[in-house]
Length: 260
Image (cartoon, rainbow, N blue to C red; front, side, top):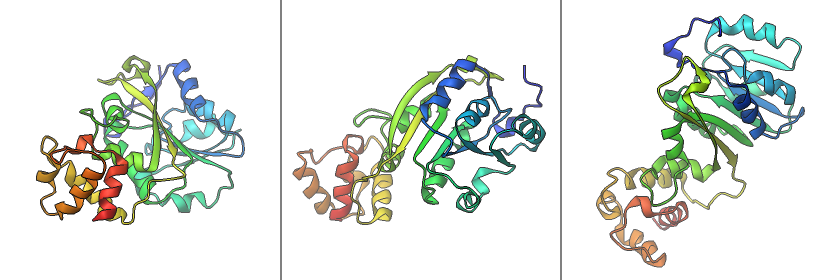
């Protein structure tokens, strides 16, 4: 049992299953030249594995964990920033570090999963790979396949930047305190050759608007656009004119956006 005053406001659920901790650490094939950003190390159960492989920079919002972590990892290449990751200038924090590849590993409180991923993307933090534990239901949306009910604007947004892979499920019983849901480990590997988009702002707006009412057709959701330009691309890709957004691939959305 971990001797800690668990704080609901920080969404704290500490992973206790040693086998799962090892499996998570092994998803990233890192070495001593690499740097791992760990968001929310908690009592350091996963950190114990990570410091054996690479340099670790941890972000921890709960200041009560400072002494525990500093003492536990004083003999390793380990640094901790006691602050909210979402409020940090990450690129500025990284200026002090010399590393070959950058990885992000995190067991994220469910309510900040998307804001953290979005922050890394928007601030152009050059991450090779992220290994994230998220709520199973959220993970299904992130990694959804075209034509399924979970396929949504967030799926396309993330797949524009990363190759997303479901690694494995983590039962709620592996945590203390036990959460109400199971989790999933996802890996996000940076795409070196992204699909060509002429105007990213228009591209992301188009995707959001296309999914605004999921059960409606593209024509109904995109009334404010020049739909003849949308139709041109649909016909070129042998798609029906009454198609819904959930049946359109990232590549076709890019083509529509570029045509507009």
